[in-house]
Length: 387
Image (cartoon, rainbow, N blue to C red; front, side):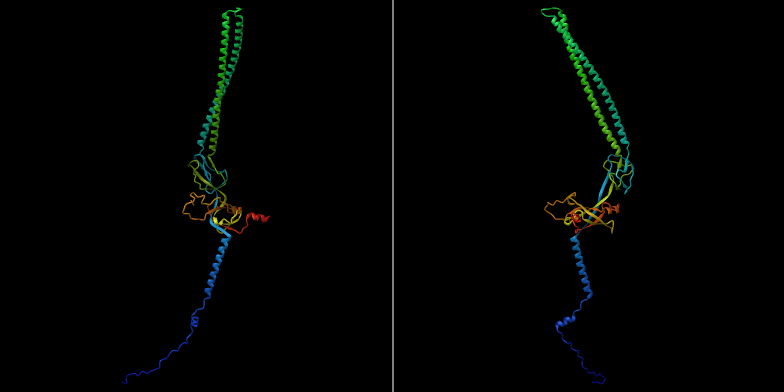
């Protein structure tokens, strides 16, 4: 080898120390990370919250019933006219408070006045005819009296003629001829004439009496016409009174659509009057009705009054479910039947103090949430316990 070639010094290689061999259980224990205390605390809190929520749900579901399907309800009276006419005055505004009997609007009374005058003129005319009929009856009665007198006179003459004829018959016979045959014939003829005169005058008297009956009947017909016209006059006066449209009840005016100059027809809705007395109609499921009884206290939350807890009482239950009162109730007799939990309306009245406090704020149609504590004693049992 040449001298320029580097000489490599051989050095011993370092051997790493051999790690002690551990058993398998010891190795697994050495590789496991200790649990985090914060995670355990969070899991415990979640579990407690779940248990608490579940317990609360069970508690409220077991001892309370509530529904959001509840609305404020009240009496809404539609206001309409009873006769046709043209509106001349409107005396109310929207949302105005009115009392029963207050005038809401007025119609033009000219047509009714003309009708009344026509009927009054007809009554006066018929009454004049009645007076004429009374005069005719008086005249017929006088004629009947005269005819009766003539009948009496004719009967008297008949008696005299009969007596004369009898005497003539006695004076003229086969044994005695005290009078002539002509005189006997004359007496007999006078008697026949007197008999015919009595019959004629009796017929005249009967005719006069019939005239009295006819005149009386005509007068009764005229009086009946007067009564009919008087009834028409009364109706016309009532129609005149209908020109004033008045409030049937006390409350507030809403949905006013009547204006001056409008021609309206009978039955046409002009406005609505809403009474201040309202209540809640809560539609509970049929499965929630088992613990409900009239008189139970109700907690009412009105959406329009947030944070205000109102008090009510269960008043009564509807005689049928809402489906039965629907326009087209379901026909469960068909083959494709599906059981659906029905809702039954329950009437809940407000506490009088709340009605007075929130007068004008509680109106029909408002949404509410009602809740009833089923742990309340039955009203009857509570009254017995109080005694």
